[in-house]
Length: 65
Image 1 (cartoon, helix red, strand yellow):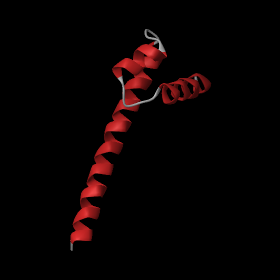
Image 2: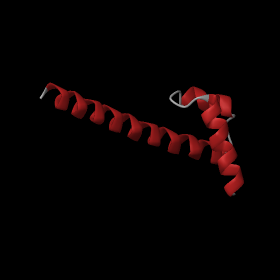
Image 3: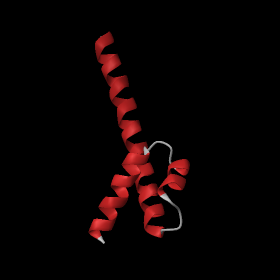
Image 4: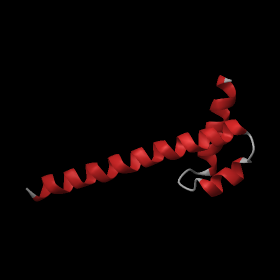
């Protein structure tokens, strides 16, 4: 019983974190596409994403456009 409760709680926290991360990635993507801020500035507004993640995201965006 206790193990199931822990697992459910862990799953919920993980799911919530994944959703927040997805929203942060979408926000960063819009900011990169707008082209008004540097990656370093975006990192200040979206601290859940590392500078390396933002650079990769920018690279991916540049390759698809």
